[in-house]
Image 1: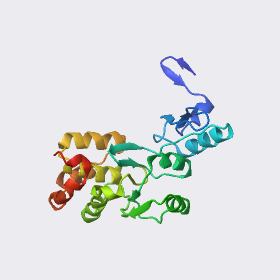
Image 2: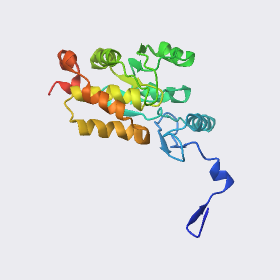
Image 3: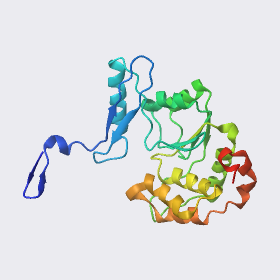
Length: 228
């Protein structure tokens, strides 16, 4: 790479780097290893790059745990992410999940269903169409039912996910934060960290107007709400 008169000269190889790169951290024998990811022009973690890194690690006799796209801890026993695939299964095993809450309407993939079955993980699916603005329609009743699952500690540890872990997942987590008495600015800041340039005004408006009154009686069952 070189600079010419203030312009960036891009090689052909660089132009092809539209997927994110996952850098494996080596782990010998059974020691835990996580991946580091950085942007090269796409999503936070490219599924193809993650799968390739995991395959390379297996060939080298190393154990690599690759988190799903946009993975993060929401609170004790509650996690969020984009749609996990086979490259993420080893990482999900470390979470010792009891439940997965999927917000996509499509049938759950067979490989994922088999993973859940073999690990005794319960699937809760509340299908919300992934529409783009100005055609976004967020069903309040569906979000409310999803929150009931999240608030029930018998389902923990639990992973909430949609396709990218941005909009639908962001709305569920944002409404949860209202129950946790977060101020709106903090709720929106968290939402925007995951949605980034694709943040939607309609999502934030939905979270602002969401009525939590019908869920307040469930608050004591959720560990992080007991002191509020």
